[in-house]
Length: 401
Image (tube, rainbow, N blue to C red; front, side):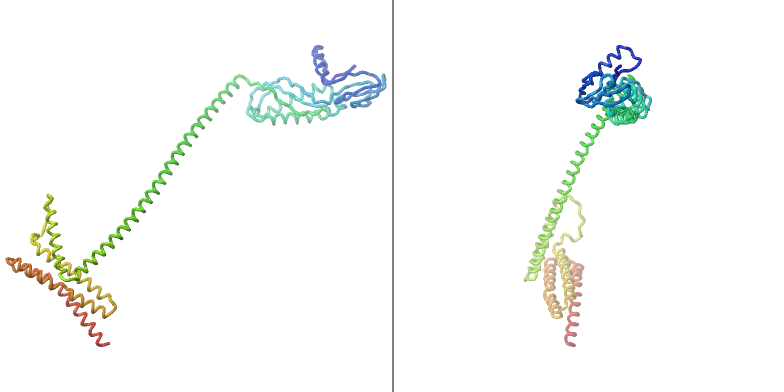
């Protein structure tokens, strides 16, 4: 009797014939007990002599002894694909799955495959199913879909540990179909839809966020540029105002210098008196144009008196300035000359002249106004006395030296 690789005991005859025909496709020859044999490539023929293993015929030309030697097994050394039937498996989170797969194997030791196990195909199939159920029970449903490749590797390693004694090597295992219960499929579909909505909301919010960031960044840059422009404008304005003030100060200094020179000339004080009188009259003219209530002195209508008072104040200030300059000067001769010049330019005659002019134009005035004009010159006379005293002190020191 000849035994084939895929025959299984205690099965219906129809199924045995179908499986036998399927396995015959893996072989290119049949067993014929003749003296001369030609073994095809990738096949191994097991020879028994008197019912005992004798040798393994390799591909090519071989001799056997008829009647004494017999071909017991023919093993195909090619890679074979075996379908693993559908089976139920329960994951770690108690989800029942219906899945099948494909197992790829090859015979590495024809002797062990022939004498190590009865019906190796059936044994490999059962081992693959039990290993797959065992590995699925260690992981959850999400891990089954996420780590499908690692699950296949674990099944292959578990099968090889058991099939090593059979002379069969499991090359790889592939899970083909995974069927879920209807309620699990609906829940997963809802989860997928929720995840998509979540991603859409996240993308929309990120878009809004990026847009707001861009708008804020634009406003920030605009404010920075605006502040820099304002800063530069203020700097330019301050620089211009500073330069304008310098120019005005120089112009005022020049004007003051010219005025001082003009005052030092002959009839300078008369010109100042006339200028003050003109400004006084012009100021009253401007006050008359507006309907304002202004408190004025009792003698505001006396132009001559107001001019005289203004000139007295001016002379007092001028005298103080000359005294300060004389005190700070280290050069004795310069101090003396400056004091003499101050005395020479003291506008006492001018005040006297103004007083005489005022008396001429104001003959009807009482003695009180005349006494007031005399009192106006008293501060100036005191300054002159102080300068005379200082000059005498300098003269005494010069004589001692």
